[in-house]
Each structure stands twice: as structure tokens, then as C-alpha cells.
Image 1: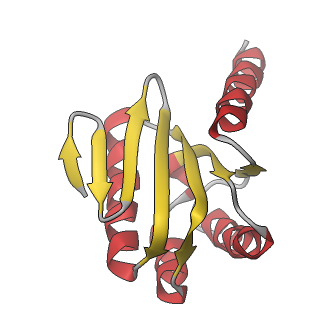
Image 2 (image 1 turned 90 degrees about the vertical axis):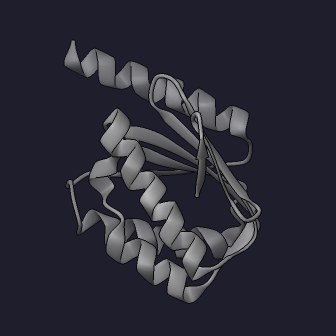
Image 3 (image 1 turned 120 degrees about the vertical axis):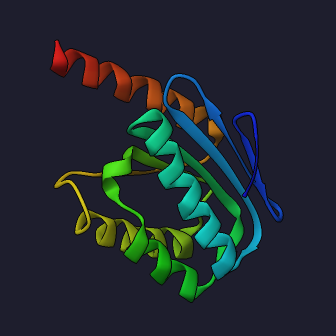
Length: 139
């Protein structure tokens, strides 16, 4: 992905980092294997630079190739994320995403939250609530 200060672009797909700990990615159209590879690199780079983070992935206007699903489940790690919040996924995409999330569980930590919401506003509200829960547990 082409990097500018906290902004990335790969084809029709874009991402930006929001302080303190959230990467917002918006995917449009077909997500090819090469684009998935660049996205996984972005996810890993983000955790290297910022530590564990929330990923809000707006996928309502996208489709993921089978090879990309396999690559994501093999190369990404659940340890990178506090949680992944998917925006706009239809039932078919939810099924694919749940399979990827299950594979990610085998690569890292024992608990991993995968959430589905309709809007980015709902995703940000979920992140804010989750932060509060984590803070109260650390307490």
C-alpha cells in the first residue's frame, strides 16, 4: 500500500490510523490476492508501530477472492488486534469472515473478538465501549 502520514491506499481500498489505537479500512470491489498481501503487510506494520489495535473493516461494498481468504487466515495473527469490527457485511461475507477469524485464533491468543455492525459510527461506539471494559478490567 502506498503510505502517506497515517493514510494508505491500495487500488480502490483505503485505510487510515486514528489515535490512539484504531485502523479504519474501507474496501471497495473485488479484493485480489495481491491486495490482500499488501493489506496483511499494513496490518502487521500497524501493530509493529502502534501495538495491538482495533481494526474497523468496512467491507459492505467488497468481495474477497478465495485465495485472499486463505492467505489472510494463514498470514495474519489475532495477536495484532484487540478486535476486528466488520462494517456492512452481508450473510455470505459474515460466513467467510467467521472462518478467517477462527483460523486467526489458531495463530495467536486464545480469545479474539469479531464483531459485525451496520455503520462505522456503530463500530466506533463498540470500540469505545470495549476500551472502557478493558480499562475497568485493568483497573
